Structures are given as structure tokens and as C-alpha cells.
Length: 336
Image (cartoon, rainbow, N blue to C red):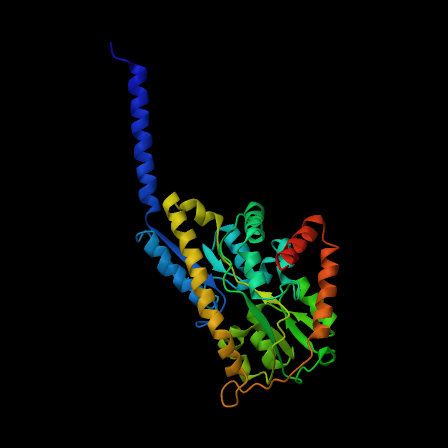
């Protein structure tokens, strides 16, 4: 006698196997658009391009990554929300622009929070960084594949050389739309004006602002040395620019493809660190050499800036709740 139940179960198992095969085949042809807001040759370039190369390699060609620089896909200030909505697959965004979407990020933005680069990498690539990535994923759906190269924001202005914090008094300074950065420049005595990155070059050229800060390489790649005569290695903010993936994209990838992009992200991260770390000294030399960048710089006393930064750190650590306080303490402890 024919066992009808067994036949039905066998048929259903067959259909399920076919569906998995079809899903795998569908996942096998994916084109990822990876956007960032900076120029060709900026610090984002080696991370984005190496990731594209390695993602294709480790996925055996099933993933193609198209890198779109210069805000072709989306402006930097809008990229995080676009990833959440699924209109952008992947993006590289400077860390301070994550803060409006995930407040814990401000702990990384605090002035002089890292003692040095070793401290910063120990935090980001260790348990503190892992905790942050998980919290970000749980709260927003965004996956960080790489924190990227850690650099410093150098300062430039059109008014005068910065010899001490007193020279900042009343200076109209462009800052990103990040409250920590706004409060820090107020503590320095400046007059901060929050502007999107896309509006910054025009504001500098027209005198709407008299100064700003950026990662060292961005000052060169954006050619701000052509319009700003004074340069200061202030190193007040440490920045990183994570490579992130949208929840919409992650759901489209099969298990092997997810492994491929995670591996590609880690190795592209290491590559960018190596490339950019070796360039910073040369870029600063270019910026301040007559006949090249031509910016003027001078020796200055950083002690007042550090003291002001510590005051900002303490205010935020004591006012943003227990989780934020514990996170700041964990960052500080990693440097001991």
C-alpha cells in the first residue's frame, strides 16, 4: 500500500531543496554600490577600493562592488539614514556624523579622549569596539565592516597663526553638525558654526567661516591650502571613518557572501591603516612647505587646549547617562 504521507513529505523536502538552490543562485549575482562623500585620492579611497577588490575575490566573483566617490550616491550627512532606508547599500562616513543617529558615538568624538594611536586602535579593535558595533547593529540595523584608519583633525584658518588657545577667541569656525564638536570649540573660545561637509568649501571661500578642521589628508585632497594660509597640528579630535553596510544589503547576502565581505572589510581596514599612516607626515610637510601647500605654521602651546578638552570630556561623561559614562570609562581604561 502506498504511504501517502511519506510521498508528500518527500515531495515537500524536494521543493524545499530546490528553493534553497534558487535562493543561493539569486544571491550569487549581487552588485553593491559603495558611496562616500570625499574626493578621489582622499583617505577613503584605499579603504573603498581595496574592499571592492577583496570582496569580489573572496566571493569568487559573485559580488561586484562599484565605488562612488564625491557624494555621487548621497551626501555624507545623509548617508546613515539612507542605509537604514535601504536606498544606499554601503557607505564610508566619518565617525562624528554617526552621532545624530547613535549617541554613544560621541564618546569617540570627545576631544583628546585617546592618548595616542595605539590607544585608539586598542579601543576600536578590542572589546570596546566590538561592544560598540553590536550596540549599533541592535539599535540601528547598520553593520560596521571596518572602523578604518584612525587620524587626527588638523586645524586651519585665514586670520592668524595659532600660538595658544587665546588666538581662537571669536574665530568663526566651521564644525560638523555634532554637539561635542560645537561645545569643544566654544570651550576653546571660538565661535563655531555648524555646516554640512558639502557646504564647507564655499563657506571658507566666501569668509562665512574663517577656519575649520579636517583629517590631515582631506585638507590636501580638498585643496584647502589654496584658500587657507595658516595650519595648526592641533590633534584635538581623533577621527575614524567606518565602512558600513545596510540591513537591506545584509539580508540579500548568503552565508558565504557575508563571510567574504567581513573578511574583505578586515583586510581592507589593515591596508588603509598601513597606507594612510605612512602618508600623514609627508602630507603635513607638503601643506607647510613653500612652493607646495605654502601654509604657515608655528610652534604653539597645546596645554590649554588639552585642559579644555578634559573639561568637555568630564561634562559629557557626567551628563549623558550611566551607559555613556561607563563607555567613556572603558575607553579611558584601555589607555592605562
